[in-house]
Length: 156
Image (spheres, rainbow, N blue to C red):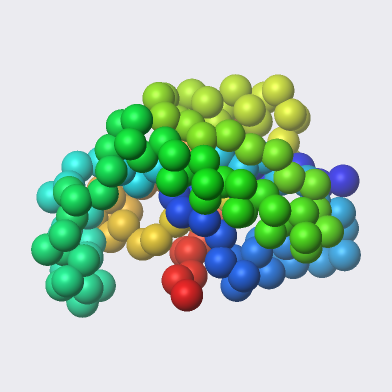
């Protein structure tokens, strides 16, 4: 069985589930999902610039209105449960947790503990962070010791 650590920021859509569960053909896949609430991530200005770059002016105007800290935990836990259920319904093994502090350290620990084969970072595009290689996938490549695949999440 192939083991993937999957880092996400929001609940998986049906397209995301199909995408990640078919990456390895017919081989069985086990997922360890790490939900990183977007409210705790990088700074509001960078997210607003990303929204403008993607032509999402309405979203840019509302950056900073998302729940942060403890208020972000409840929606993150709900999104994690939705994602785990969707992966299990697709025939995969799936466990997970919400990660609030030191996400890259947690990712490294999970990879080591589970002897994971890869890391998949599935997030919305973050153009500014990606340009400066400060996005999760770029930073993980220097830390986890297994291949890191960066995919863009779909929205419904």
